[in-house]
Length: 78
Image (cartoon, rainbow, N blue to C red):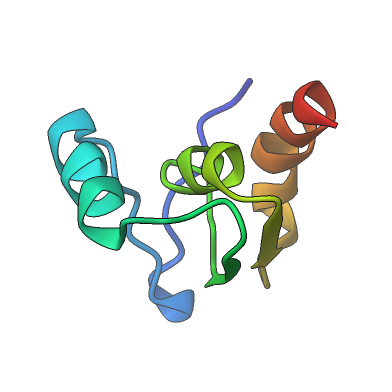
């Protein structure tokens, strides 16, 4: 898959550090019954950790180019 570059006009930054991702997820303390809305999931670096912790995840992504990263991973889980 061709690498997608961050679109600065959309304010995109891609999180790639596993350490930072783990710290964020730990800090959020997500429970199974929580409703989670993520604005701009991008490539899904945090999204799939959240998706695995709650039954009520909803991601809103403006950039259609990001869907090629999100859909295959979501299909695996549903």
